[in-house]
Picture 1 (cartoon, rainbow, N blue to C red):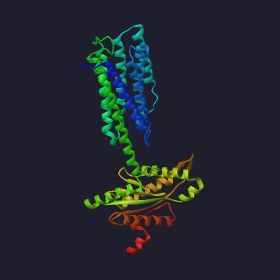
Picture 2: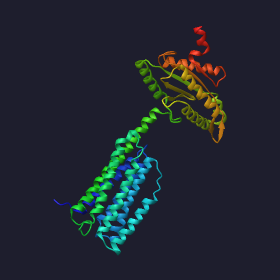
Picture 3: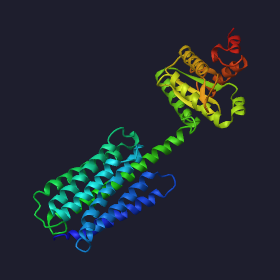
Picture 4: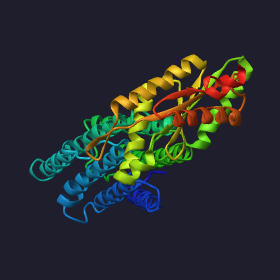
Length: 393
């Protein structure tokens, strides 16, 4: 049974239109990004371009050849804009839209001035091959770990599409068909390829977006939205894992609690927006002053917890003291001004000051309040606080 090329073109445009509507419907849901909406617009644009080819011999050639092919290439340029939105890249694409203009001009030339079916196929297919390859290159670097499979799937679909489009451009040299809708294996293969590429790429983009949204949801469940450090629940999970590891391996770790000094007065003086900037600035200083394997959490308000794996009391105290000095010396830039800032801290060590969250937190918290009572801007170690020394004397 021989398939009719015009029927396949209609199937293509219906497929593109359906994929576009699905993508636009998905994009209308709250919480999605512009990526899917832009991809949906690209698929609808592709359907419009294919409808021009379906009307070949029923409308002027400048419409069914020149404009239709340029619109199809423009749809792919729009699809690449969607991918750049997903990757957080600049969306301006003068090169892509310049290619659309070049395709329009060459299609008009090889349709009216120098009629050549082979040249038209080579131009359109070559342009598509370049764009598909660009799309694959957009997806290739720095793939988020949580979306490896979806990114690689879509990238491979685009590389495969680029290879097939390039092969179609080369096959134009041997194509003896009088025009695109004439019966023949090459024509049928071309539109079957279009259907496969559109469907595979759209499924890939939806898959990527779903995995990225899932990643963001997981992140929101674990990370404090203001300071971008672990929230209390996620920090407690890390703490329990460290307790399990220490008990299993006979190791130790330390916990430090930091509290920004006179933060309420700062909020009253400068306002809560500036206070939020100060909290962000403090976490940046905290990150720069600790080791790579240390874990930061926002315990509540202006209090932050620092988990230091494989760290005894002496080293933990040095790390906490380094944080205190950095905060005092650097201050925080907020609302166009430098705001002087100090922090107090309390340090407790597993096995020395407690064996679970409640006991270690209580020890670190008590040491913190001793630091506050002693004048602030200092770090007190639980086992070395005055009351602790008196109890052991």
